[in-house]
Length: 133
Image (tube, rainbow, N blue to C red; front, side):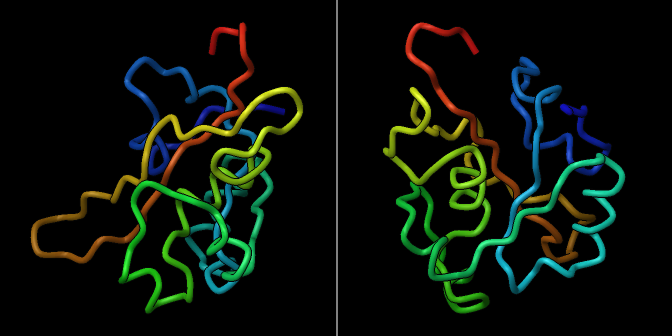
């Protein structure tokens, strides 16, 4: 069932709201799957939390790879790669009559001045030719 995002999850959704009411899952790297904030968001949104191993995420082509992510969890992308995989495949792969595309590239949370980034998110969807999103 599709649920609207919660307050802390709202930021990465497009301004036109195209994806905000259609979230079907949260996705991350296995090394972060037990993070209390992710688990709380999944419960609050009543969405499954999908966890991918770093090697699987590393195989997905993304527009914004990160050396920080590669050093921290072993893959150059978590947010974008996990979003693409969760909606049906990796970058450029045709799945179920469409191709997974990023609607919103990785977006970092905006904590108080001087505080470290707490979360990074991306939004992907299955683009089906001839269907409006």
